[in-house]
Amino acid sequence: MHTIAISSELSLNDEAGRLKEELENFQAIKGAIQCLNFLAQHNLPHSTLFEPFVTFCIEVLKSPVLLPLAKEKNASYRSYRSANEFLETMASVKREEILQEINSSPCFSVLSDETSDLNNRKHMAVAVKYINKGAPKMAFVQDKQLPDGKAETIYRELIPIIDTCGSVEKLYSFTSDGAGAMIGVREGVASKLEEQNYNIASIIN
Image (cartoon, rainbow, N blue to C red; front, side):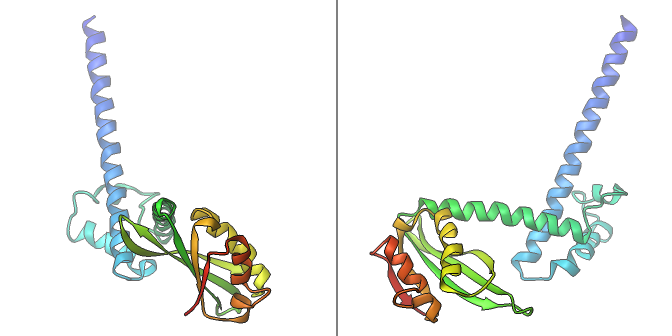
């Protein structure tokens, strides 16, 4: 019985040690994500600064929170790949928060612009203005790549984005740059939206 008691105590100690180590590793990864968030908030290039920034905190500042990352051999969570995975996760969480706010708003407005990137691929940027806690707020919602810049294509890709924000019934205005595909009297995106909700105001910015 004495031997069993000693064995049980050692097992409990091992379990406590394992849980402590897991908690420390979790806090270290959380700290690395906070470092990445700091770079993003200050518009600093994470692709080149994330790894040296975290390494500086560990090796020079001797950060007790980040120190466990220095012990990891195969997964340091300081690489370019880790930074991108962290960034994607952060963006996903932030997007969900924004969509929840927009869906809670009694109405919203869509601001859309179509452009081309360096490879001449068409893109549609979508921002939404809405009401949050009684105050107006604006948020970037999506950058959607398009096969072409035709009004029908833009409208087809825009409707699902509007649906994620609530519905076209809650849309009270549509703002664009005034291009023909956007405000064409018969086939423009604004006209197609007005067919779904005649109360939508079309604004040229």
